[in-house]
Image 1 (cartoon, helix red, strand yellow):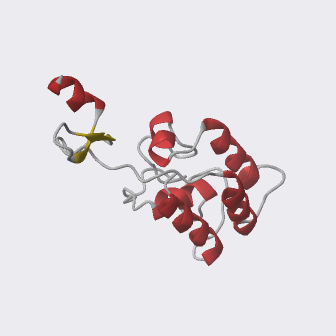
Image 2 (cartoon, rainbow, N blue to C red):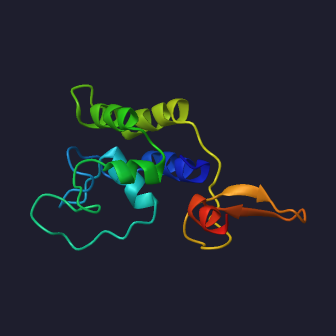
Length: 144
């Protein structure tokens, strides 16, 4: 998980701005689970409410899809633990969940988009002339 996003998430959980709910990422009455707060602070623009129960994040209402977990840099096991803390019989507060996130989710380096396509994250490379850049695997394979 990117350090900046992790910090925003933890701060938002502690802010008191988000009423804590269960089951749905964001309920029809604007209650959030801890993962819904992550979605919100990521800048996601929630679509109009479609149905009586909760808003959607892509096709999801209650959890993250594999692609969404990858986007945020959190594992399936971490997602399950967060859901258990938020929705389970233990019913942790957002403050307690924020503490757990700080102690258990490691920040990763910010990914930089490819200098060629500017779409996909890439890895650092050094050209023969000594110029440093970033290239994704797809663009690199085309250039080879």
